[in-house]
Image (cartoon, rainbow over all chains, first blue to last red):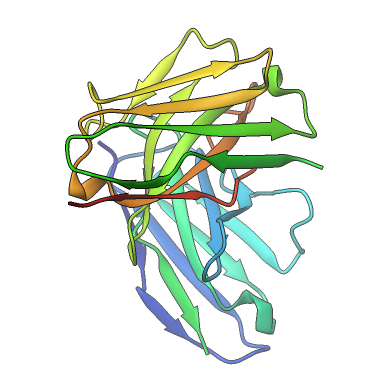
Length: 106
Length: 120
């Protein structure tokens, strides 16, 4: 099973600041990594797939990068609605696995 | 607009059974693989099961293998999850989610979830 480790667990920032979230895989997942955002009481929302492709309707301030085992989700300038939990997920191999999440808080 | 509406959750005793449904609309159901993902209270996301667009390929997490069965009825645009031998640790919100046929197994659209509580 491919284990995804996200860091930090919590990121405390202010609106307008840059957020950098990390996801590290226990073995190479090529570029087959996705990022999701989840707000309290809501379903997750796809942000980025295949490491760097923004999903439909996702603002340009969200960007993904990386390949192999190290990946980054960057939010260039935090908006109030961006404070949430973010998960990464790999689709290289079964079982599909998620990281433990990073909470971005004020 | 893509809509996924889960139903069938509720309170069930350990060892019991439950069948979840996910009614899909607003897109061509047969163009998508489908998935179940769950989230225990206060915890992260856990993939449960996936089924191919035609229904001929299925995958399960080890934690549910042999107890849960995923299926779909393409004529009704509906996804199912039959859950047997339920355990307390199966307590979670269960989400259905789409995966594009040609794009791989990430989760593109999500339903709002249905809560399953396993308790005596």
